[in-house]
Amino acid sequence: MKDLFKDLFNKTQCQRNGVCSTNPVIQAVEAVIINEIRQIAFFVVKLHEVNFTNNEIVKNTVLALSVMITDINFNKKSFFAFYSNLRAMKENIKKFYIEKSNELKISYEFINPYYADLEGDIDLTSIIKSGENIIREFYNTINEEKFRLINLIILICKITSLKLVKLSEYKEPDFNHYYEILRLLALINHKTTREEKFIRRIKEFSNIIYQIQKELDFELSASYGKRTGGKISSNIYAGHSILVFGGDLDELYNLLEKTKNEEINVYINLSMISSIFYPKFLQFHNFKGIFGTNNVESDFSKFKGTIYITENSTRPLDLAFRGTIYSTKIIPQDKTIKIDKENLAPLIEETKKHEGFEAYVQGKEYDFEYSIERIKEKIENNQDKKFLIYLGIKDSSVEENFKNYTILNFIYPYETEGLYYAVENLDMKNTSVFFSKCTLETVNTLISLIDRGLEKIYMGKCLTSDINPHIKEALQKDFKVLM
Image 1 (cartoon, one colour):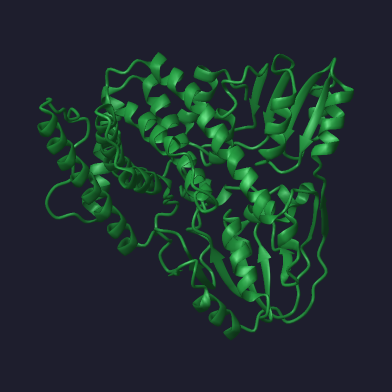
Image 2: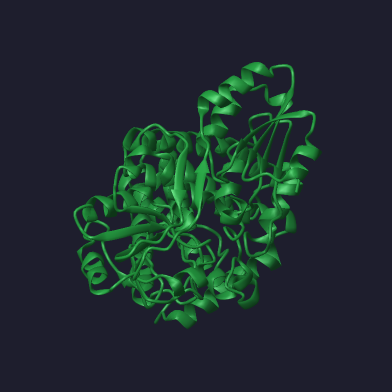
């Protein structure tokens, strides 16, 4: 089991080549995007103060905030279309804000020139330069404490937006959740905002993250069956093949449904491992199992078939471009073929043109235990003890360091359904949580717990390739997370 996960967060190629969270090109481009969105958030909040909210703009802004650019070689055409729409949305809400202020006969405000807006002809070079200026402005005008908190706010707003957009594909979310994301982001507009207010608002927002994730867990179980333990293999089967990469379960299900009558074998990358906990995925005879060990550069080069990258994939893939790759990402990697997730015909037809794997190859079998009933029983039988909730595959040192604790272990590092069940049924003063992996998603889940009175929260080692080091510093210094 440990071998399966040993490369799950292996970013050696990222560290070697700089394609990671601190990559200056991606940082600059993201800074420009956030520059537009934080201005829209400003106008959204100001309009809300006079009891007017444009629901469509709020939802579209959250959608834009959820978009992840993970690679230097992103598709420029898709990016410029996205960026143009974002600028147009900003200008429209700005114009409406002025009109509404005049109508109500109140004075309107604008943000101080915190960042310089792009003007005139815009190309990638000018965008990168503008982004560099924005980042430099941060460094030169904001103290270190505030800077790290701003980085954390941007991260949790982005990941929570992604979760909320995903939830909206199953049900209509509480509109207030959309607004609260933008209200939190709007804090970064003002230089005078005190660090204490940042921390207080992040703690308040932690409950929004918790609610959204809990609702998403419920909808996934309602759609794909009550979660149970699951088995999966790394066997390879002869025939046409598709490898699915990313965490969008709805896209995997859609693909399995559309290929169930085709002679096409579907494999998943570890980023999609949560699918095996839901019974409905296992009913498809063409769902064959897992391919590779999540060393993406190696896996992509060895896979004999087409590769399908789902919309909300957050893993950098610059060094993994091998074979024929299709993607539903809003801003996909360059040299991929962009498709609509409702029309997978181009992907399916291309797959049929490839011979795929020639013969069956025996792999390993993996068995993942998952039972809320077992967790409930363990809680009831150990009420007088301290508890440690451990997310990820624990080694012997965990048992040694926490020998006086009752350990609730969830093998999957991103588990939230079981985590939240345990949190709601334990005395928080005697309960600690240990996140074995430090990633964007686990940081967001960690923040969802910071206002719940836990005894201690631990996070595994955070590499620069995993998250921005300023975020690590904020977790340690501002929220007392132990690393």
